[in-house]
Length: 187
Image 1 (spheres, rainbow, N blue to C red):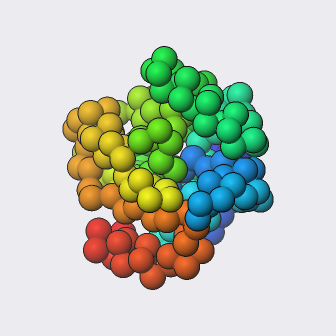
Image 2 (image 1 turned 90 degrees about the horizontal axis):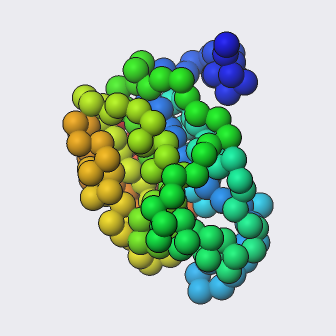
């Protein structure tokens, strides 16, 4: 049975089916430039769509079954609890396979010094042996945190490239930085 996401992909023209852009992003209240502001679209989703324009890759949003609160403080507390308990939240939908992809661009915000736990769920769902993984982490000064080492631990047989840390508050102006990173990695 084909999922709605997969059907939408098959209907697209000019898609680079060798590149997967898997991303987690959260709209609502976010910490941006020292203030809590309401974002209609999460910063990482903005970055993922920039990547998609440059690569024509297949885009997949990693979404937990249970949505995070749009309230910043409640979301932070929930993410801390998930990390502390080493949870793997169930996803709304997942890909059936990543076999046809050569390159996976994994985009996520820095939560508690690493990736949000639904990204761990996604990564642990597949065998990334022989795949090239390019991590992109949006943040407000905490950089990649330990996310790159976490990806290396989970995806031991993948070719994990140097990640790109992008300030969420500047993501809309990061097109040239993202494009240069993709070109450097031959994507």
